[in-house]
Length: 80
Image (cartoon, rainbow, N blue to C red; front, side, top):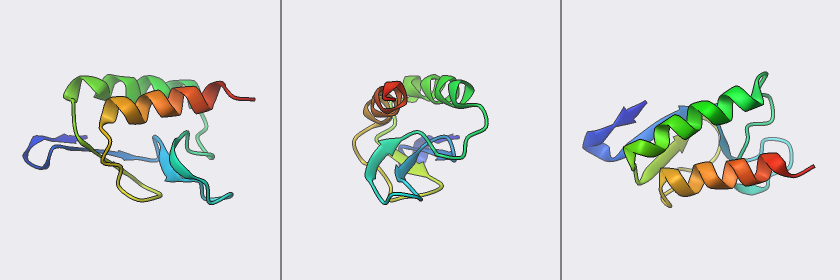
């Protein structure tokens, strides 16, 4: 959900900025997503908002912009 008045997108469990199992920080796929490809596709739809803040369900707010967050998630999802 994009909230223009605060320049933020709320992504819930669409991504995490702190992996709940490993403690690794930074935008990454949420580890318990049932449909990872669909989650990433949904995140990609948020890029057009251009939001500065990304607010996940787990982990700290990310201030690097939604495009950078989605790119980091896509990169992490391609790792084995």
